[in-house]
Every structure is written in structure tokens, then in C-alpha cells.
Amino acid sequence: MLNKVFHLTENHTTVKTECIAGVTTFMTMAYILAVNPNILSAAGMDPTAVLLATCLASFLGTMCMGMMANLPFALSAGMGLNAFFAYTVVGNMGYPWQVALLAVLVEGVIFLVLSLTNVREALFNVIPISLKQAVSVGIGVYIAFIGLQNAGVVVNNDSTLVSLVSFTDHFRTSGICALLAIIGIFLTAVLYLKHVKGSILIGILGTWILGILCQLTGLYQVDAEAGYNSLIPTFAMTDFSKLGETFGQCFRVDFDGISIVNFIVVIFSFLFVDIFDTLGTLVGVCTKADMLDKDGKFAKIKPALLADSIATSAGAILGTSTTTTFVESSAGVAVGGRTGLTAVVTAVLFLVSMLFAPIFIAIPSFATAPALVIVGFLMFTTITEIKFSEKDYVKAIPAYLCILAMPLFYSISEGISIGVISYTLLHLICGRGKEVKPLMYILTVLFILKYIFL
Image 1 (cartoon, rainbow, N blue to C red):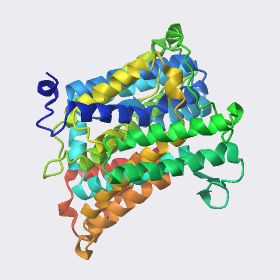
Image 2 (cartoon, rainbow, N blue to C red; image 1 turned 135 degrees about the vertical axis):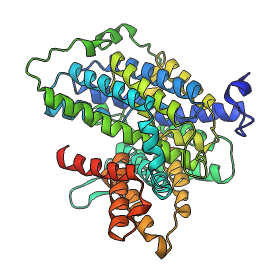
Image 3 (cartoon, one colour; image 1 turned 90 degrees about the vertical axis):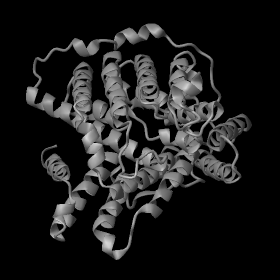
Image 4 (cartoon, helix red, strand yellow; image 1 turned 180 degrees about the vertical axis):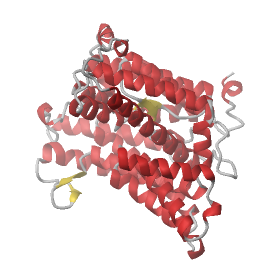
């Protein structure tokens, strides 16, 4: 039956492979269950309510992706968008979090309409193949950087912006975590090179177990105030009644003292980042999974975008920030996930995690970092497909800038923006403007206007 529903044989995969891929994707995304409540609580929202809303929105969106599009992609509350929600819209602009949720809901509905009218599909298809390949590479570097940063291997530095952590300073907290992440990277790499099935998942679990052993022997010390919690999972249950504190609150908004113009700007800020983060993720992961046709188009783009927009709208009603397709889906793809069964497995795990949230929250960032670094490498290998001969420099330079921008600007959408603008301008200046499709010119103007007004 599963073969008939998900076309496993046609996609050269098996139930076992898809299940391993689904678990792997979930394990690399499980950090969101700890991070999102922490970020949105800064906006005054109840952390438990946010956790439940995040689980439900992730379940709904990922299940839609699996059943509607038959794709191995998972969705959850988008990183960056949740920070924009809490620290910019609520923190700096002073809007109540209920207003921010309403903005997310409206953005989701607009997103849905754009998906139904083929606008987003057209945006996906108009991006040149060289930029699509660059997006895959850029995302690879970007998620590897995220992994190293979350694990504490890469730290802030006043003189050089970022630097390598000092392993000896605070060795029993930050130092040992960074060291375990590095050990985990080599462990995962060796397993992958030896073609061990589920090597990335084993790398996550193996690194976590090493961390638990370090805690039991005193090498790792718990310091909750500094963010170093116990690595040993607890078995407490979640208070489900808390969901009532956020559910439907987007409809209970008082617009007194709220500028409609600023509110519209907030909506379109959410919309802009959501659209191009989602497109960038789909482009990058689909390119790596060889899901694009010879023209660089993606046949299942419409149901994928519909699933994303449904998840965003539902998530706002439940009580969480923008729900979007996660780049960590590439972890499942890397271990062989090719159909919606991978997404369904991930979705079920999000639902189950409502019951055992403390266990999943106990998975530390240094344990998921090796998966992100190795998956980043696998996506980076797409760089060999970009043509770097001198006659193709007009296409290669925008691809290079796109790759460069993603990790440096900490944004997939910024990478796409820089890539599109430079692609169009270089073609125009070099007298090759006719090679650029009309929609690319429109995109270029919109991107430039974004930097001027947003």
C-alpha cells in the first residue's frame, strides 16, 4: 500500500530508507522545539503554548507536504522569522504578539493565493539554473555555519566578528560542547565514508551519548543560567491546556494606536522573507536530490508551496510564527529520502513529541551540528556543476555572490536577492540583456526596492 501511495519503487527507495530519512530529518530539526518557545517567550508568549503550537503546525504542514506533494520535506517555525516576530515586530515596533500573529496569518493567506495563481511557481522556474546550483551550494555553507555556531565552535569576536572558540576557557561547558561537536563531525564523516546506513542519524545519537557520558563523569557540567542544560532526558508530561493561551489569539486584536501602514509593511516583510526562504530551500534541496528536470523546473512546486502556505496560516491560528520549509530537510534527503513517506514519518514524530517534549528538547545543539556540517558538505558538492570558464563568468560571478551572501548575511533570501540583482545587471552591462527573462527584471526591481524601503 505504501508503495502505491508514495511510489517508492519509482523513486528507487524503500520503506526502511524513508523511515530512517524521516527520523534523521526530525532529529536535525528537533532543536526548534527548544529554540522557538525560547524566542517567542521574549514576546510575552507562554513557552509551553508555543511548543504545542509549533508541534501541531509542524505536523500539519509536513503531513500536507508528504501527502499533497509526495516530497521528503519538513516544515516548522522558521528561524530568523521567529526572531523578526519577537525582537523586531513586538520588541522594537511595540506591537502586541497577537497583532504579530495576525500579520503572519494575513501573510499566509496571501502566500496561499499566490500559490494558487502560479505566481510562486513562475518565480521558481524563472531563476536561472546557475543560480539554482549556487543556492544549493550557498545553503550547504549556510547550514554548516549554523551547525558550528549552534554548537559553540564558532563564536562572536569583537575584532574579527567570528572566531574559533577557546576550548580551555570554560572547558566543562562551552569547551567540551565544541569538542564533542568536532568529534561528532569526524564520527559522522567516517560512518558516511564507510557507507553505513543512517550514518547521519547515528552520528547525532552517538554524539549525544558521548555528551551524556561526559555529564555522568563530570567532564560536562550543567549550568542552566548559561544555557547548558542537562543532557539526560526527563520524562515529564506537557500541560496541553496551555495551548488555549495562544490558540485563536490572532483574531482578538485591538488596533488602537497601531499604524495600518506599518502593519502592512510588517505583513509584506514576513511575506517577502517567507517566499524567498521557501523558494531558496526548495531550489537547493531539489537540486541536490536531482528532482529538477533538464530545464531546471520542478514539477511538484505547486503542491509544495500550497503545503507551506497552509502551514503558515494554521500556525498563526495555533499560536506560532511563520511556518516554512526547513533546509534541514536536506539531512533526510542525504540519507536517501525521496518521497512523501519521509515527510509523514517526520510529521508523526512532531506530533508524538508533544507527549515527550522534554526528551526531544534534551538533544543538544552540539549533537545535531555534525549532521548539519556533513549535509552542508553534500550540498556544497553541487559547486562542480557551475560553469566557471571565462565565457560563462557573467553567470558564474552572480552564482559566486549568491553563495557568498548566504552565510555572511545569515539569510537564504538575501543570497537569492544578491544573486538575482547581480545576474540581471551584469547581463545588461555586458550587452546580453536579451538572455534575461522578463520576470527576472521585475524580480530585480523588487529586490532593489526592498533594500530601499524595507
